[in-house]
Length: 187
Image 1 (tube, rainbow, N blue to C red):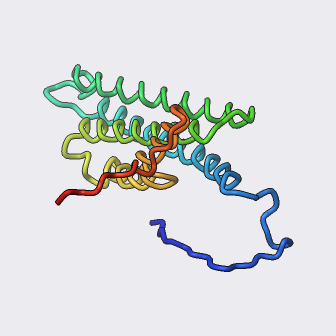
Image 2: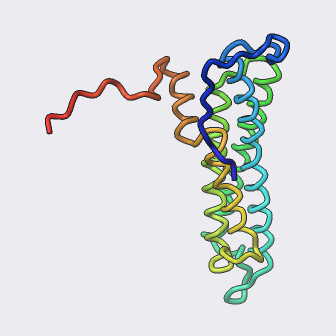
């Protein structure tokens, strides 16, 4: 678990030789945050690939009504949806890396990538749980563990909602982090 807290520095003096080089504003710190969001965007991809692989093997090995579970239409559809999400997540991760390498990545790109991959990964893991039925919540099959591993990723480096707001600000040019002035209540 990552503990969050407020740090308040009041009248603090930091000698020039102790300051981080090249860091002059929060904008400079945001670049570090954007890079870490790229790394975090890859974690749900790996989790999703592991869940897909395990479900694929399980459905081919487990038999029901004389046929492997992989032979049933709904199971195949769920596998296809899982694989489609994984392929799309891989492309988003790849694109983020290319944008970063070329120096063209923006905070909105990084935020969108992190938010979107963690959201799609939740769907993949949920489908995996469905495919395994009751076994999907047992530790032996690791899907429940994947749920637990994925949930903090959805939240850290900015929650899905905050990353969406960062991207929305970049798209519209309007920051919506603080609500507009609210009229006083008449109550």
